[in-house]
Length: 220
Image (cartoon, rainbow, N blue to C red; front, top):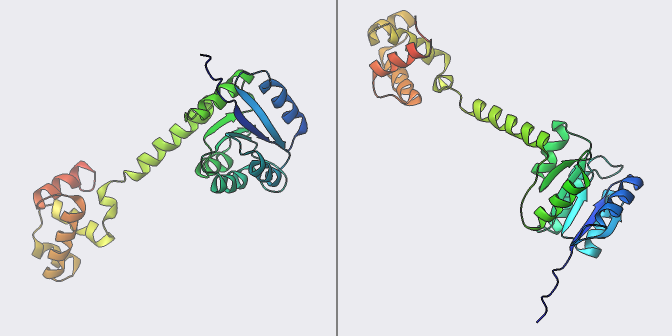
């Protein structure tokens, strides 16, 4: 019994440069298991042809006249959420790369990629595997690390200016009455601030709060 031949991956090209489309179609036409079903010279035409051909993968340019690749990707995936959009662009700047990824782009390649790399990315996308060009992956990792660091702001950043004043005096071993006298506030207000400080710093008592202050350079 003969094995049924697997269906070719249907690919739609969306790029406003005709020569780029011609080159991609010619190269991909020599690849086993890949079929270029349509070519669009604009985002609007890409949406229309996607409705006509129902592609598995769309190779998407970013900068085009009219609807750009970001908005085209966003609209295309609203209509066909299972379609895989592979960005193929010359641009690596943040204001283009991150928005299109947030819009749902599955993979991101530069036009300096080899033909075999583009073909491999198409096959990977059909298997549900995302591919990022090395420079893109590096930028995303750096952004992730930067976001992670910024999201790990020290707990004392949550303290108000007054609570910071109370913490510094508390770290000096001052009593509630001493703190009240120096800041010219009521002792009940001091107790209120101390309670807030302990909660925000995640410590159990005044001693731990004082240690925290010294460890973080908040007290002399």
